[in-house]
Length: 450
Image 1: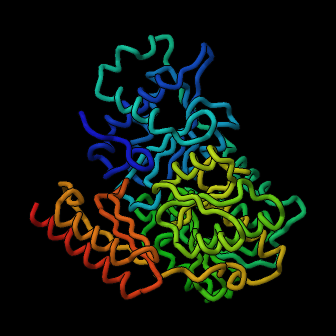
Image 2: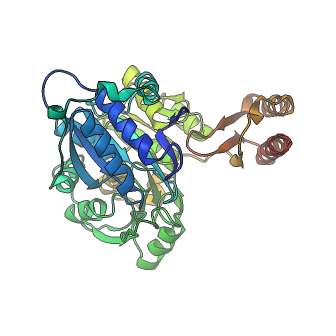
Image 3: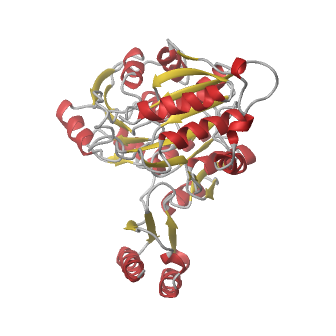
């Protein structure tokens, strides 16, 4: 069963195919359970999932592995990833598990693990768990009288809703706002509309009828066209699009225009800087964030700290350097005053707070900077290492030279899909397009030759 398991965000792949098989899930449960035993108390795990059909299979396999390691498992059912991170701490659990492939289609699934502090695991801990998966782990499992129990936990949705509501000032109401929220037929299909309604908003909920197959299907943060149409149709003040596990968000303004993660971070950073809340003198994002965000923050004497792609690395940098706003262009927004991971609903609430305080439409508030022309293209690969081929290396070097200091080039394998992502940005849009297209062509030729 030897192989590589963990990627950018936990373990992810096609359901019922390596590594997302019931056998691997059970062994991950065993290894994670053994890794987080500390002391003689009854150890506990909180386990949530999104709405994929394969969630039932992976959930049961994980329960078997965790109970075999002597862990008691609290089953949360469909619930957002940030709720799992919050409940790890709230219920004093030793591990948090989220079964989800985030924004991927229904046929994929994944396993995300959280430590007792509510943070995603470090590379070192993931490597330790991965190293246990191909060994005789059964020898270290619990004795017959030390096996764990599993039980469903009631009231977890209410806990998360109250947690999300408390991130706003007690006196703030969303009364007077008409909000369309697209839940992507995913994990937030109950909690997001309910939280917004309880805060006083007029709520129009989209894609809240999961059937196991329709999660992220032409909806949610990666497919916001339906949300844009509905915002126009009902004359809403704002649209909120979550992804399948609700750890990312995209905003749609009252005119139907998309507001991505970069603009959301700019809005929140400016608001928090003005109120004296922003910590660390800057914002943390990844190499994929637009140069326009960096320039906008620079004009406020704030720094943009860049990390490699993955909200886990954003959070690690935030913790190490004392910053409280970070995220990704894709909509993972991390506000460490509230959460230990990306939280789509809480991030949207901070945008709504800005609207209420300033009494201005989203279109005026959210356009904080003019994005520098940026183009991202994906090249599908079925194997090999085309980025190590000499023609590809030469094309990349030539592209960097052509862009010069006025642009940026980022080329990386995806951590969750069999893709190579090619991104360039700069003030000259034609040059950006030419550079990306040239590199994509050379990578495609190298892939075909392989």
